Length: 169
Image 1 (cartoon, rainbow, N blue to C red):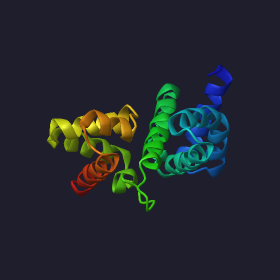
Image 2 (image 1 turned 90 degrees about the vertical axis):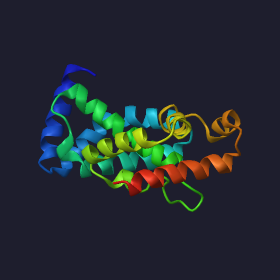
Image 3 (image 1 turned 90 degrees about the horizontal axis):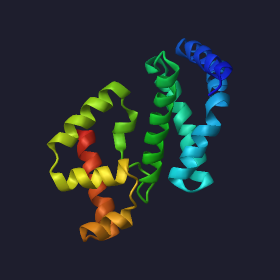
Image 4 (image 1 turned 60 degrees about the vertical axis):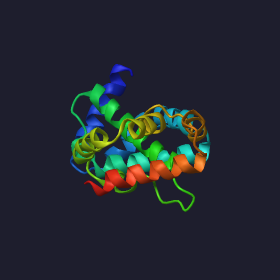
């Protein structure tokens, strides 16, 4: 990121934290092309990438007070939100209810603490399944093959695990 873009990003974030909607537009202009590229690489279709992009900037607006002051941390913050939105979209069930459930609706600081506790309380196989699906973006089919399960069984197990994590909040 060029020095002028860095300064623009810092200024936009400072205004955004104070509730300036025009600052969100500026932040979008400065960061959306890179974020969209990452989302497209993760989700593989322009339609899903656009859906995740909209969700990302809606979440940024919602969590604007949590955006860090340092530019490098701001970029990481935006990337983390985009990644979470991509996960939520990638693992939607057939009836379009997000498997991640209420985890995505929680403020970030609560989500991170609860996620850590939830992962520690899971058995190793469940932890490996969640890590493969949500952090390593391994396909449901690949997880199913590796674990000797059907893809539907893996989807169901991921939904159950995410639901359990949401209930522990």
